[in-house]
Length: 112
Image (cartoon, rainbow, N blue to C red; front, side):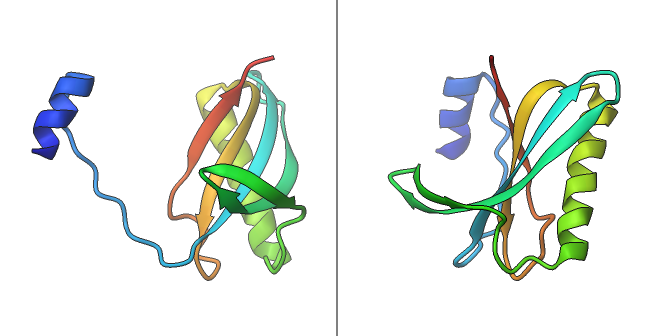
């Protein structure tokens, strides 16, 4: 049934399974990049408190993340943007579980 729905909606019946995370935190890192390898991060924020998929409260910096992990995440976001020649402002959305940070990344570009 799922493959049929995917094929109907997206013309592709590929289905991906994601790992279930119990009580994850929703941490975001914003970036700005010129597409020429000049990318900066605008630090992180915890956006876990949501209602109906809308952020209710953002806390910056995200509490409790060790500095060495925070820096590793920033550098990974910058590298990802530079690797693909990303140009613009964007947000990396990172589900966090006990600081196993690199479980998933979803990048949402922002238009200006």
